[in-house]
Amino acid sequence: MNSPTPPSPPPFSPVPAPFRPRRIGLLIGGSALAILLICAISAIIVVPRITGDLSEEEARVTEAQAAANTADQELRRAAERLLTTPAIRYEGSFTGPDGDRIRMDVRVTNEGTVRGKLTTGGQTAEILDLSDRTFIQVGAAFWRKAGITDGREKDFAKQWVRVPGDLFGFDFGDVLAPALFATGMVPSIDENGYPQQEESPELGAIHSVDGVEAQAVVLGGVTYLISTAEPKQLLGVSTVPVTESGGGFQPIAYRVSDVELRATLEVLTDDERQLLFDEVKRQMGVLSQALDSIVQVSLTGKASLSPCTTSGCTANLKLRSRVTSASKYVTIGKQVTVEVDITMTLDGKLVKFCPVVLTMKPKDTKTARCRASYYIPPARNPKTHQIYAAYTAVARAVTTADAKKMAADFADEIERNGALGVKPPNKSHEYLPPGVSPPTLNTRQQQARTRVEQLAKQACADVQRWPGESAQHWGDRVHRRLAELVDAEPASANLFAEVGYLNESLARRWKNPVTGREGWEKGAKAPDVVLGVSELEPELFLDLKTGAKGLELKWYEDLKRQLPERYQSIPAITVRC
Image (cartoon, rainbow, N blue to C red; front, side, top):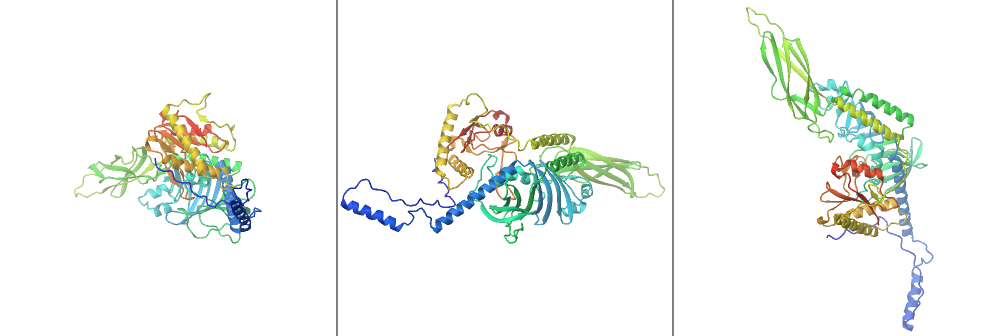
């Protein structure tokens, strides 16, 4: 077994206890007595801290520790409130993939449904983000600038168009959803992971955000502006440093993350939230006409006009669809509806217009045909006639089945949104699923439990709590230490530290392009330790709790839904220091 990694030193050295002279209860001779008395007297003279006063350096350290602890608490309290905020309005700007400045005014529900406006290059785009699908509505000039000049730009300008979620540099639903933004601030806020890096927030200056006094807290180069008044609320965020002069919320030009973002946050009232829900439902009603920019349809080979006679001609277009985006939301193999418009002319005059509907898979090939009938009478002097066929092809973004599923999902979200802030009975569990007795463990599982409990105790002992440090911050550091110890175990132990599950598969970590922090992707659930032959073949979940709380039933039920069906009855057990 590899030697465990020593614990990381605290960012501030703990203050040494003031010297207190001890009485000597046993004397072993005059000489020894003289030496001991001299040492004691010397100590009293040399160390003038017998009264408990701190040196200037120690006072500075203590003050810095207190400031870091205060910053951590401010950040956590704001994140806790944001975690259960039903909906937020963001106003501000950010940099796009090409470095251009994009203004935004968007309203975002707790789970990431987005409705709003983006303005860039003189063009204003309406945006609608529904979980795994993002749509925009914008003029043809925007599409031409984006490189779409094959005729589709005219169709795209008339209706909603599905685009990759990260078209503007980041996925709005993934980054700006209040619940997800809160975990970007404090990854352990929903008890589903912990910070991967050792970081200590710092207190900044006092600012004004729309007339409300706010305390700046800086973490990882991101400035969070938190109300000084209760209840603590996140009022603004900036990924560039905020100037301290004038007390305003003004960034200076210095990039510290993938996306430069500056925005103010405002909690929607109940009436405003209802208006948002109504607006989203209205727009969902017309999404059946939405087009898809992710799937492009083009000719493969040449179009043929055959057979062609003096009485008619048939245009044959062999079309191939292809995915034009690497977006994680594109499912290869899913069928799409493609609308093909074929126009046939004879000597420049329209003779036939054929709307053809094809059902295709990405990278599929199908033939669209259009038959034009006409009459060319015999002539004494033969004349050459020109028959021409042109086409446009666009993919529909939403099928009837998709529309029904989206409506049902949004209805469920509205119900969950209405329950935010309503706390269920706070009953925690030492093991789950709940029962009258603990789950029966086989020898292998019991050995794993015993070993992880030993490692948990070691982690708690290795990570000393700093003076004034919050229990939550200390718990994050203990969890990180436990992961190091579990990773150091031999492969034969079959123990895996913090495994994320999503949609019956392993979840991935992703870097939030705004906060620059790593976390689990949206919807993933991650127990602290997994016993199994592999991560996808779990036998037992072990979750460390450093406080009084235990396992929550909702967390366990959410975890089960992300597991392969055959593993949804795997027990979870609390591990303590």
